[in-house]
Length: 143
Image (cartoon, rainbow, N blue to C red; front, side, top):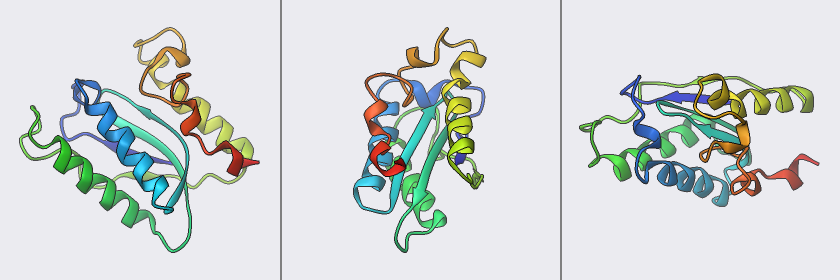
């Protein structure tokens, strides 16, 4: 599980305009390239929670560098970033087992509820809790 924060903390910039679709596209691209299994995400106004499992020879640093570089290029011309999208580094946590995975997924899905943005996790449109994005989770791999 990775959490990465926008350079502009305290703003709603990551969920503005078409920005969430750029982030989702980047996560799907990483999956489609075979570097990871996508296991859930939640885009918050100023940070991103992303659960995935690395596959093959891909490293966590490679995934995050690729993701950060791609999204920075795509979002660079939009305010308020002025050339900087992400804070330096990211927070990662190794998930050990299905029980912990389910707990972490529930935690990230409920983040918008705890923040008072929606009443139910499935109402947040930028999360794999939302019915339109649930299929992004590689559930067949989990079984």
